[in-house]
Amino acid sequence: MPAEKIETPPLLEVQGLVVTTTGPDGETVRLIDDVSFTVNDGEVVGIVGESGSGKSLTMLAVMGLLPYGLDIAEGAIRWRGRDIVGLGEQAMREIRGRDIGMIFQDPMTALNPLRRIGSQLAEAIRLHQKVSRGQARTRVHDLLGRVGVKDAAKRARAYPHEWSGGMRQRAVIAMAMANDPSLLIADEPTTALDVTVQAQVMQTLEKARAELSSALILITHDLGLAAQNASRMLIMYSGRIVETGATRDIFLSPTHPYTQGLLKSQLTERDERAYAIPGNPPSPRLRPPGCAFAPRCELSRGRSICVEERPLLELRANGSCSACHFSDEVGAAAPVGSTGSEAR
Image (cartoon, rainbow, N blue to C red):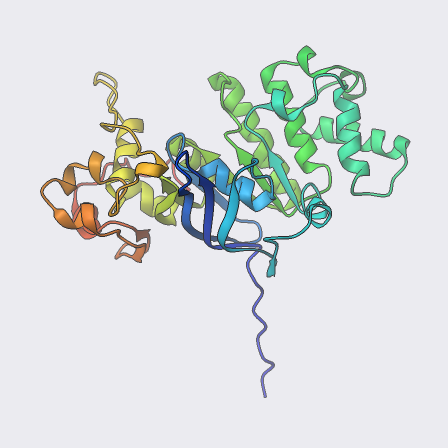
């Protein structure tokens, strides 16, 4: 009789996540509204959307780092099958930094300006590993060398303000790598960096991920950056996931008008004016009862269902999932992408 196959749970599973706050009139406001996704071992997942779409907030909820006044009202966050919602701070600290490393958007806010960089990295190591100060110092120098910092022993004695933006980002990557985590979360890791430094930082991040054989969640507003690095994408809008699927499928044949708009803003001809999606995302307090994107969507004009009925994520013909009442119509339109050589 063949042995029964044991299914391994995903590395990270987020199910029905709702993050709320209290509005000025005492009403409950759903900032993150019913978000679900999984990340498997070694997988690279891109989370894409405009500023304010809920990308970073979702990951802060995963890390147990929600700002004061925000709470997880519903849903589950499972780490290797274990629900970590409601865990005490001490238990979460054992997961943060050791199992999950986060690379924050602004390294100047992630690093203490009053402490030397090497000292901060050593602290991250000694919080999770029983090593001496000398062993931690050696580990720091090794980490900095692995992320491309030359003369690491000397540079480790510098303060954050003495390093350039790109070098500070490397230090934050090294800190996230310090305890060989199974999952790295990179929140807009190339923001405010010039194009050359962006490429160097992404190469450093990919090298770090490959060395650790870890999974990576790449949070970005840049679909092109996600296409170059992620095998799967989640598209977020107004605190919800509106499309998800393999990067190549989404890049070549998106089935949600918002995804199409993001792609058009990236893929413009040299002599054309850059495309911009008309209007602005709604405030979570004023989110329409139907599709949150409806006020900005040309396809929804004259169609009451878009305004009145919220579309749910459903599997489409191309293998992706889309939250649009007319996703088949969107997917049948001419592709907005190129040959897809940029996408994984």
